[in-house]
Length: 512
Image 1 (cartoon, rainbow, N blue to C red):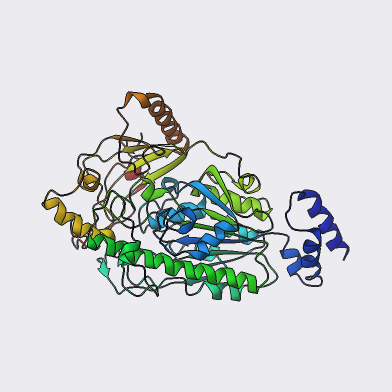
Image 2: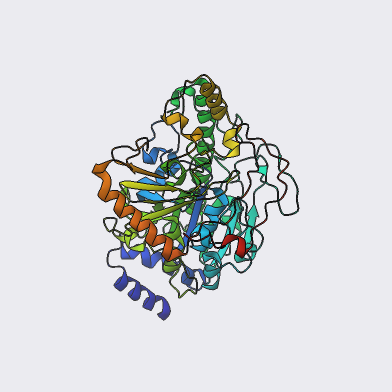
């Protein structure tokens, strides 16, 4: 009992700003007297929910008027919504590897799609385990075998419905049947956790990743609900493609609701921090695998009732590389993990505070070869295209979709706008500069506009400094495409895509 009293006194001294009455805090702690769970609650539980290929503003919380996301919206009305959040890359597994390690993709050893995290990788999940947390991952895995033991338990979702890549065993890629949401084990993961430890849950959906089939949501969205962005043609097929994408977001939202209900049922919601993000943008042309906002900007909503006031927003700029140091700081112990991000804990306490001046993004091989970098602020974005001779072909799954096939027909008929032709353009400009405030669709390249000279110089300098600081490099050889750039179908002549040797990666031409 003395230990409990000491804890209360210490907690009150440190948390003078807390919203909840002291009586509530005391009652929660005393309810656990005689149980190890009382001590566990001194540390926050951490839940990271990762959507798979969801655009940053495709939910009600970010202003979409038609996509039905009541539970994601609830996170925002009960927590803190970040308006300027960016991922470090535009591709599924490299993004997840970057999040888990707290490093930029080129420093994870897993920067290309489907490359697993190498043996010896350090992750914040493993560090949380050392700090006394129970850790579980449920849903899409996509991180390789060498970090499985960094979690106490893994509930891996079926990858059915994805194109399986060729691996180092030489197996050619193939298609398999459509998948469920990938969220089916989220509740079970929470149910199976020990009650005497704080917990970290990595909850990774398969929604709204392609391939799409009818029936994901009942009732479904309608074609009239769809808002077609200007870089896509407004046709019946494009609307149908987006409608099915909306339905998978709606299905994901239902599972977010199940997680919230389970936390309430277990009476741990108040001291559980939930962070909702996506791993990259929507799987449509000029979105996923691009460095535009449709590829690397992410929803970023944090709910933590004991600490965060409801219905707040922040303009603080954050990067996915910041998640690892933040979670480790909140865990309250010394960690040996070296990250390349910065903790955004202060923004949780003061949404008006600032964190970083720049966020950086990377483009690597994803079904097709490409290499580019970008730097962004809340208002401006600069993109450097390293492989100018290659068109910005969308991911292969998007290439097989209705939207891309419609775009191919319209291109042949010369009926695409300039914005809609961007994925076919080769050579591409070496540099692109966008004013995100005046041009949120990133349709007007200002790189040669004298009015933006000072912005261009500032951003090119920031990108050069980051390149040097993080040891970024240009590979000495290119990786072959694994799919046809027109049809999106597998190229069976490409049978093996091994990781290049260090000499090949860092050859004499490999440094910027």
